[in-house]
Length: 245
Image 1 (tube, rainbow, N blue to C red):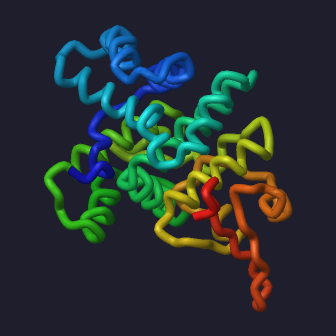
Image 2 (cartoon, one colour; image 1 turned 90 degrees about the vertical axis):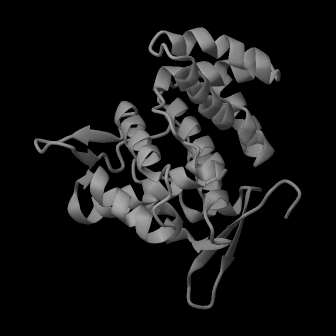
């Protein structure tokens, strides 16, 4: 199964907070799963619904360390130590980008449409996804679950038109430039391109909810990035893993 299509449940912020807190306390996936059971059980009754929801939460906050152990560990440490509750959404979002390619594709399309038209519908987003991936059986449901999650996270708001939502562009700020750089590292590692111009990195459509204040020199001094000035004057940014690969 394509894990990118595996985002098949609506995910609420309190559940993500709980998953992050449990992952900070133990490395035992079975224990995390058992502790999440009553958390999601407050809203879900069916065993299958609870299991699938917990699967997504575990993938985001536990299994993402298999993809980017350094960024995962930083997220856990940040979650434990940040006094700013608003920072948590940056962490949840970054790890979700890393683990779920389909999530990245979907939110990138939402960002693109929102920039041009100011609002999105499930129908239009699905059409864009189908044009790139084909009409896979789980696509419709996963897209709907992602949109529902973004609504819960405050990144999409209802409009006066039914089933039409307004992306909240650049509505979220971080408490520090370091956290901004962490999210950019997540986005760049999740992106299919090996490197991007700095100006394009800041404007990635999948990062539409976030407001960045850092400058390119912040990334020059960050070991997670390599920044090279091209002859055309562009500052090209590449993500670097701890091994340098």
